[in-house]
Image (tube, rainbow, N blue to C red):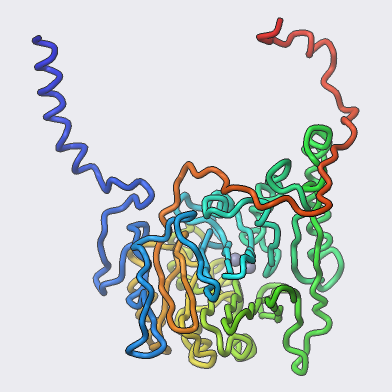
Length: 420
Ligand SMILES: [Zn+2]
Ligand SMILES: [Zn+2]
């Protein structure tokens, strides 16, 4: 009895500690709160914007959405586009709460596209209720590793998950070794050990990558963009941007009267602003100052200034959006920090006063011709893959030859098994 009472007393003492330990929802690990200027804090389940709902006119009726987007529980309307950030950070050490660059774009016609596949993003991607077999189209802006470093785990969604090739679009490059074909060939070649093992166990269909090159030599002032994808009513154009080496590109997706533009990394230019004209949603990089970047990454200021030369300040992004006039202007590729949010928006507002959003991981944007709604996704941290799509006609599920690289017999003989 004494032990029971001690237990009850201990539980009573502990309860208030548990209750005050933090928010109950581990997917939004921080208490709700705002910055001094009234912007929501990161990781609190609220998108970082003061305009989460944008309507075409004052009396536009907006569909009632749940507070959070919960994958698998919400049907996309036939005329609707959904954009979700799977990663929003960039060229610096990765963070648990912010993967590198990656976007998932879903259309009401059932099509799904990935834009960039940075490291630390594939877990978010797989948690969005889309089966890996349908995550097979990736559009790469450029080959900096914060935009392609997550390709291995996406490629690995093979063997009864994606039994068909992964398709990757990207630039032809200044020379062949700098192009998307060489890159994907190297990824497959570097996976040789994995493939030699899996090919006799699993269908070989998913163990290849099909590159789709955009020929950058075709770009000119008279030919500013090149069609990269044209199927099922979806057109995706590529256009050049100024960033690092030749071959960095942005994309413009047009479908059902809706337009999504993504430039990832780029120095600001009137050219890219022109390519973004008429966009419903325009997602562009936004960068802290060289001093801030140097401070958070413990790097010399001179090196940070070198990085800055290849990127865009908030005031410069405002100038791009002043020309492009998107319904929603989005900044991504930014170090999220409570202390940087207000300064960023203040700088942004010096040159632009349209609706803007600072993207964090799992920010979701629903777009229709009448309205745009921004929320945070409430993804299950232990999500299993969504049900698979119906098998494609002619799907080859055959396996290959076993590898000759067998474990030596003397080592096999030491194995321990339930069957022995
Ligand atoms: Zn980047
Ligand atoms: Zn880059």
